[in-house]
Structure formats: C-alpha cells, structure tokens
Image (cartoon, rainbow, N blue to C red; front, side, top):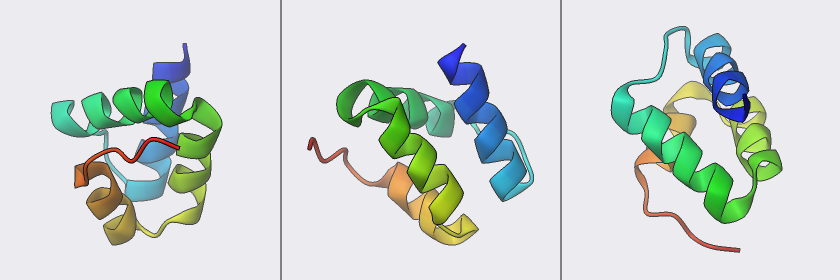
Length: 61
C-alpha cells in the first residue's frame, strides 16, 4: 500500500513511473528513515534534486 502511494507521488512529481532502482530506493528509504520523510522529499524536492537524492546512499536519521 505505502509503496503504491509513494510510487504515485513520484510519478506525479517527475512525470513518469519510477524505474526499478528508483522504486527500490524509495522503499529502502521508507524503511530506513520513515515513509513521512520520503513523502516530504517527494513533495518538496524538484525533479532533478529528487532523482539525485534517490541515487545517494541512505543516511539514517
């Protein structure tokens, strides 16, 4: 359920569905730092910043 919601937010923000790697990063980040933090990033970061953020190593809070 949460994966579907975060994937939809990504698609609306970027204009396409996440790649497998991006989807994996979204889910790993949701587990590591919380779905709310990932949701904030999906809503707050512009497209290029969001793509870069997903490609970075996860920083645990």
